[in-house]
Length: 273
Ligand SMILES: Nc1ncnc2c1ncn2[C@@H]1O[C@H](COP(=O)(O)OP(=O)(O)O)[C@@H](O)[C@H]1O
Ligand SMILES: [Mg+2]
Image (cartoon, rainbow, N blue to C red; front, side, top):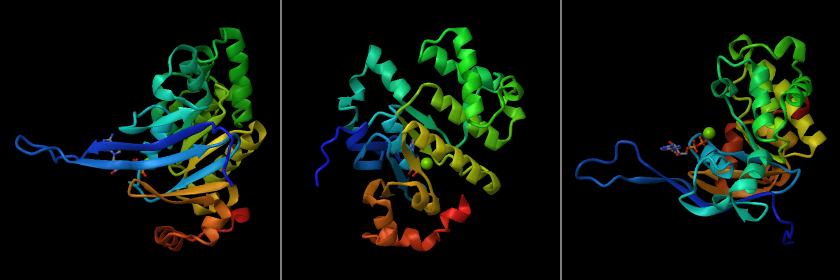
């Protein structure tokens, strides 16, 4: 069956080339590597698409192209059918609000001298144009939603928080702009195993409540099984397999997917969460 809905966010045949480090020289042409090689992907409203693949397979580069942070060398990224390379004015602001990111290491993306309440307030002021009073109220509501009691946390600096708490701040900051899609790039892999499940639980509760679409980049096939509607498998910059999560995990069509499954046992998700 062909899907006639216009995707929220779409990559059409995108590639990204990077110079191979150390390959260039005075008399040598620089060698180029295809970090992402002619990948197409469509993310629909409210769906969870998991992106899996070994380290170096191009997942982060693809995520950054979908966020408009890295320009494709070839192909195009479309938001609601419009090429994001041409975005300007209102369209640029809308895109900035609607497509948000949660990084692996939120700590590294927070200003160390800025109280976390102010970090969450920034997108409210800049992206939504809220005045100071309204944004402070909204910060408290957001901190509350991610499980950080605002009175206790809004004035804290990033280094006063645990890794899990900082990741909650990252989630609050992403939610502040009222996005419709979140690119989550291995959002729990830097955390202690003991707090991973709590953060995952929070992220997927918010996904359901707010009908968010996720591109969820992960190594954890248990999470894929428990949470994802669809899964896409990348290997050396290319998509080797994509489909319904149950189908891909239970009856993988591609040899690389079978290897990946064999290398990582899929735990019982009900025990994990
Ligand atoms: N800014 C960059 N400059 C040069 N090479 C890069 C850059 N970003 C990524 N790469 C290379 O592109 C390939 C894919 O990287 P990445 O997208 O980070 O993969 P993944 O997230 O799956 O681990 C890797 O070989 C990486 O070294
Ligand atoms: Mg990565």
